[in-house]
Length: 137
Image (cartoon, rainbow, N blue to C red; front, side, top):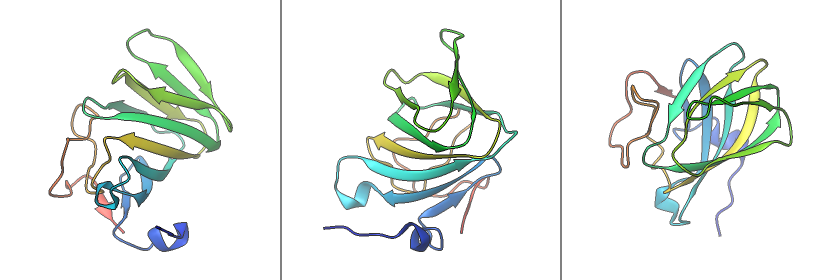
């Protein structure tokens, strides 16, 4: 059984920050669950471009508002508490938080905890080092 407290993760090296978001990674690849689980805050006023070429992700918005643009279809979806979106086809997308957005995220395959977005907005399959555009706090 794994039991972790979000407040403890926020103070550990399992909490990763960038200029656009902060992610508390509660379950990681080494936990052998077959997925990773994160609580992420995306900061108001940012435009976060992502394209997870190596992962699928499901996101549940817990708090905040913004929009999600599917770059493949051009369709924009409103985001607010209770909305879930799943990137089941490695969808290129942009999240534009109007307020800070707090969300719960699940990744498959699980991330190691050291990933940050590359120039394409993707996570590598495996990450050995933290890139300079994110810090661990």
